[in-house]
Length: 345
Image 1 (cartoon, rainbow, N blue to C red):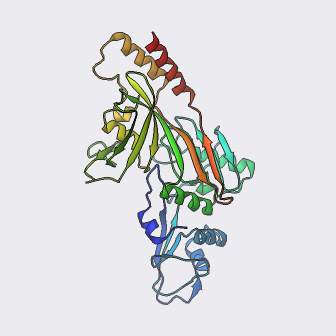
Image 2: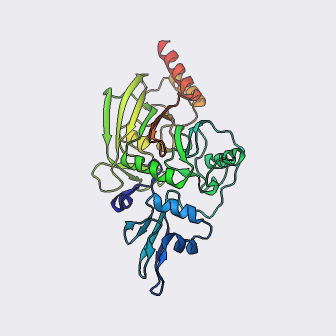
Image 3: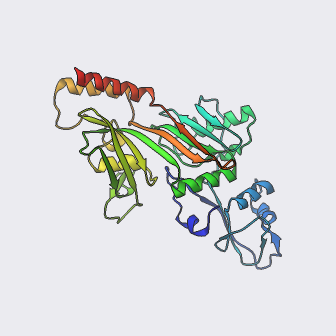
């Protein structure tokens, strides 16, 4: 599925998840020739020969820099690396009965329309109550075929971002879908509300995205490319509200917080994005009535205004295109209605 050059360059940030190394060993000089699927069972005792064969089939078992098949016979001195599409974890995923909006499911994958406020994957400070916990329960309850301890996140969206994401249910589907995200052949559009009135109806924001030098919770844009990773965001204005603009965003790359960082960089921070200082009324407007209005809208929309609106990709088994659209969630819809009413009056 992925050649060695692709593996070296694949991005593993939140929006464009790639491959993680789970094993890296050098074969002992005294090792007798042995099929690699049998050999890896020694080092991955919690796995099975079938799972290892799937990993080989996906192109994720690398020997001396080259992907090999399950019948490859290891030799003394071989450098073996096993790459998987989920990070190594010590914690077992605990199934939890949490409501989740599943818009499509089959034996290979599930597409979810995530509510805002739900963390996608367990991690520091959020070890349960996540989308992955909810899906583990769903799979277990319905007897779906999946590796419950390795729910396959091909990509991620932030806790307070709503909308569509796809989760693979087996190793082959993970790698097939991950390749599409890596090659940027998926069809994804985001809706965002940003502060201010953009000058152009359409535009492109370019600039490397990397960690902020002082605030490690933020990402910054480095136009000179001195830090971070190459990032490109295309946008189109859908509606103007004088002090706020509704835009549609198409990502050419998928960096962590890319939309949030890019729009802050051009002076149009996402509406109510507290992490990026978008949670205060637009500067220069001191009318008491306006400030009260913004406070009311913040109560309706208590998160950054970003929604993963569309998702399209080629199915790993049928090879047919699947395409999904998520309607604007209620909090953003209510905010739009309130803005329209404010401007009319």
